[in-house]
Image 1 (tube, one colour):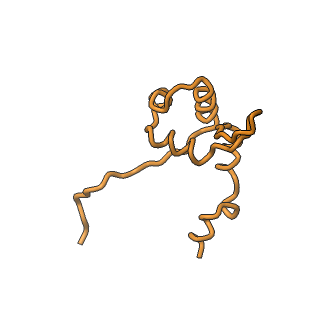
Image 2 (cartoon, one colour):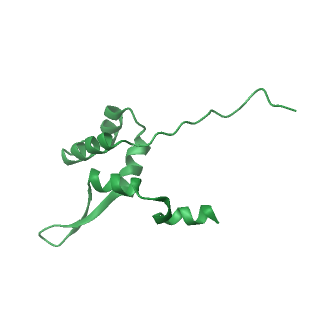
Image 3 (cartoon, one colour):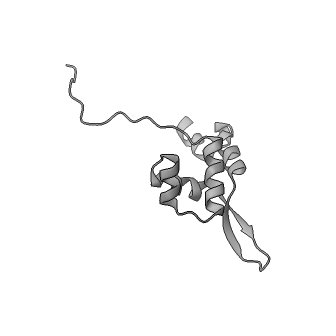
Length: 94
């Protein structure tokens, strides 16, 4: 028996490019809000929030306060690293 009517949409995921990450870094530095960044890149707001959450690094300022900073080059390196270095990949392979 084959199903001819599907109730779910086919999803197509596309990773952020290095250029898009650079644009995110520039806009964050200019203190542009996340919704405007998402609109400029034609991406969903949750994609930008997720990118900033996962790939921001802790940086200490001159007053020794730790703050989160987003760098496009470090985010790109994390996303291009081999799967065996990623912690969640080990769970999927076993």
